[in-house]
Image (cartoon, rainbow, N blue to C red; front, side, top):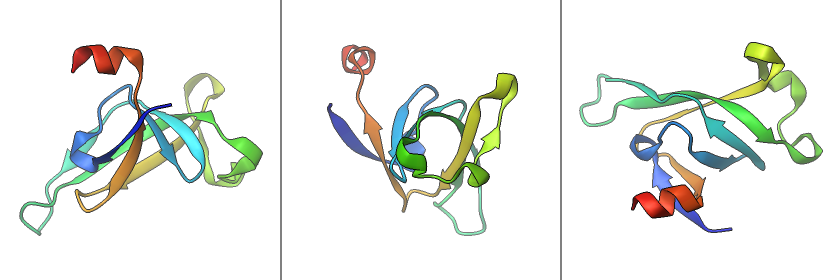
Length: 93
C-alpha cells in the first residue's frame, strides 16, 4: 500500500486517509479563513471504512445517512494526513 503525507489543503473528496489507526473516505472538503492570514482551516466529515479493534471508540463517531459511521477530520496546513494512494489517483497524476 503506497501512502503520501499531505497537508490539509491537499485533502480531496474521495481520498482515503489513515487517521488514529483507522481508514476514512473524505466526503467533502470545506474550509474557512481564520484571523491568522495564510492558515485557513479545512474540515471534512469522512465515512469510516475500517476501524480495527475500535481504534476510535464508537462513542466518538457519528452516524451518517443510511447508518454509516462518520468521523470529522480538521486542521490547517500545519496538520498533515496520510493519504492512501489508489490506482485512479496515480493515473490522474
